[in-house]
Amino acid sequence: MPVSEKQKGYARKWDKENMHTISTRVRMEEFKDYKAWCEMRGVTVTSEIKRFVMGELDKYYAELDRLHEEEMKN
Image (cartoon, rainbow, N blue to C red; front, side):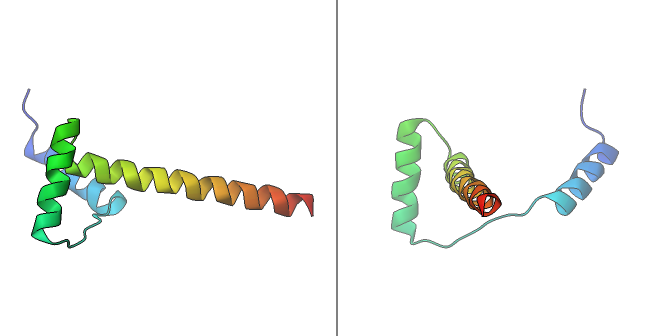
């Protein structure tokens, strides 16, 4: 069943309130090389960037937990 225009509107509203786009500029040659690397691995550029960001956030959250535990000991 196709998505109605009303449902699309709700999705756009939710995205606007809850999501943010991260963008950056790189040289065309670097982008082409990165895209080729992703294709070779069978992943998309977007999914690899998201995987990287989420991995870095995991490290950040672990560090926050460590600092909190250290603070609780003192």
